[in-house]
Length: 285
Image (tube, rainbow, N blue to C red):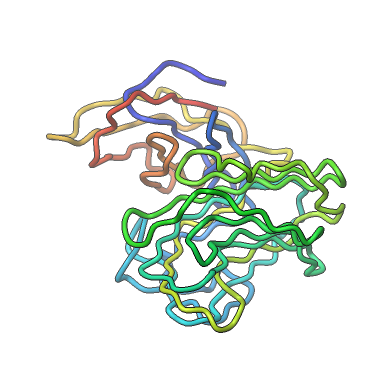
């Protein structure tokens, strides 16, 4: 539910051993996350299998480390602990350069069947491919190279002919990539990031990857007593109290304007935002 307007944006509590970073355009929500990787462990050990992607410190979004590839074939795959029929993938990406189409993320079934993927085409436009029906849909949204980083959110519901795909880029829905169409009936069981096709030329960095299970029965509760104060010129300090019910959070994600600006591990209950929010936000559950 929504509560009092605040000068900075929502806090979302996280549960179990991973972050819940669900902030879909038009409203925020909370969900138990099945998997997350901010690459701050300095390697690709959280993934089931990888090829070509390396963890480095030259470019990063939310911390010190990010995954990066400057080779044609570079990807990582994660087999989820539990399958789900309703999930959101959230990730940040940055092209240093790109001279060819490049995959960003892909969802597959537990049996490794193809469900869907999101990519950037040769002209830089964001593209969604339904791997079940074999239909590719190209948007008018152009992905730029260099800074700033781009935030991709992909919500996928597997429900036979009532399947639903919603894609957002940098906090706003992408026109033409909100589709109700068949994605089969096999639930989501694997998450992939990066590019699999050969013969591609690009420099791609990926960071703050999360798959949130929207079908999970147990969801973390929002923190309480959110307060905002000055932490110095141009800085804002936000503090809160832990949830009083539900699963104990392992960490908290901080959002400004529907974009994640930081994360702190429990039991910490404060965060300093060094870029003051210009517009009001909402503390949501």
